[in-house]
Image (cartoon, rainbow, N blue to C red; front, side, top):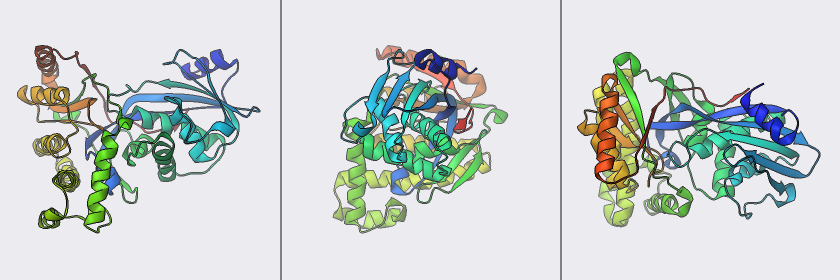
Length: 375
């Protein structure tokens, strides 16, 4: 019996009907452009959220987790509404709401994706629950449809105006590949991402400055992009060229220009990164990763001192490229480095953090992994 099944049985006194898991993600490049119909290039990491679920005859949803000491949260089905306050369980309830489930459930969660580290623990939670429910109730949703329903849960129930990237990669990723995702129509292409065969490693640096994206910073930046779209009478940033942006700069505010400049240039960087990967040109990929961080730091202003420190220390130690990942305001950075330099790079980052009296960072690596699955 699996670990999640044993946990479920300990709390609820019986075996679950179904178990599923879904991974967190690292976005190689393409940040804050999924809601602009852009292209993104994430991959799934090894760390997953596991879920076990059983149907009941009660009109109640019961939710427990390893991380919350197995305390059971009970919510009447009639009380499931976007207006309902709550904590982490709102992500689970949002998926139940978005899928239209009106049956009593017992749910147990084991979330192994670090929370607040910019590795999309929320999408892993949503995707694992959605995958299990889609199968348990024979709903028949394909993966793009399931991603959209998870996004609906986070947008409309939780109140976080995220794009579609995190849910899509958590559901659709394939082992050994980054996922080139067209956020306009959710078409995908697997791009081989085998850095190890080239003597390289992708180091993930968790600054341990945990972000909270529902606090308004993310929403404010998305609102700026939406304002540019309205003022320039375009469908999305996908339809805006750099020449058009420069020629119509006077029609938008300086902040709106900076946000749009990030979006337009970041979309192009993703396409350029795919070309670099297909050519195994990791030097060029590193340059694009660096440019992405500079844009996120200066145009989109979602970095923070700890993220900048991690990036700067990585580059000083010889990294080909480094940047913040995720929503920003904390979380993690990535560094593309020579495998032989892993330990020296970690030490350089640790020393840089210590010199600034920052909390010690955490490090891990991950190969591109499989998306959501039923156990």
